[in-house]
Image 1 (tube, one colour):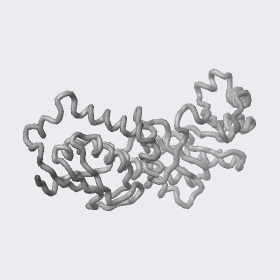
Image 2 (image 1 turned 90 degrees about the vertical axis):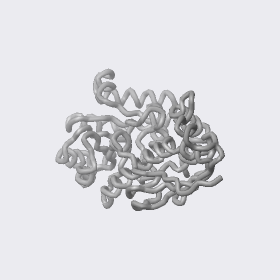
Image 3 (image 1 turned 60 degrees about the vertical axis):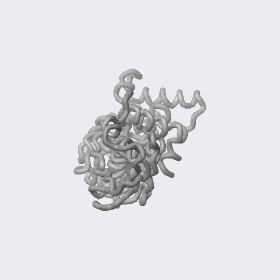
Image 4 (image 1 turned 30 degrees about the vertical axis):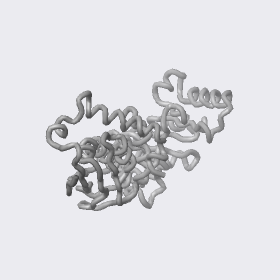
Length: 293
């Protein structure tokens, strides 16, 4: 399932349109108006300038469709494909003005989502052979969460909750408001029961910061426990204390350098905010190869 099927055409067209409008302003592409004859057509190639995983081809395709004049993007790879440096991943044909107008907006999205997919692929490779799965977080660009989380999945990692609406995650401020960890978990279970939700529909996860809080949380039997900023040795201790009674998630201070060491502690899940908030865009270039009338 591609980006278009994941987010829907209305969502994708709205975001692409806004991105194009931001670039064009009220006066349009002044450089093209001054240098590129309106009737001139062209063919351009999009090349990967680094190895990585492609994600977001539909963003570029829809960008071409909404550009005036419109242009056609043809991809030679699919989302999720790993490509090597130098690989020609797509071709763009049509009005030369259209090609140049949509170039940056198309590549901005494609590069960003491919960067996320590439990092997700690296992260999942690092935990291979362990029981842990790699998750993203809600640390996403405003308005682009659905697309960014799609890119995470395209790279082989998994999504944490999509928003505040699909899971309960009890953090320190909630715990303080409720009067304690036990009280917070029981309050959430009571709310869930009152509203007729099952544990599968609305799972409850609680954040703990030490072994004492972990033991309290285990008594209340949430669906998951998040171990916040535990050291590697503390993670091993938490796994031993829990003894399989509840899935454990490591979070805080996680990066690609310590990811495998954390996975080897025996935790079930590792959340990595850097998958979206600190990712480096994949380096792609668009070069016009021929022009014609």
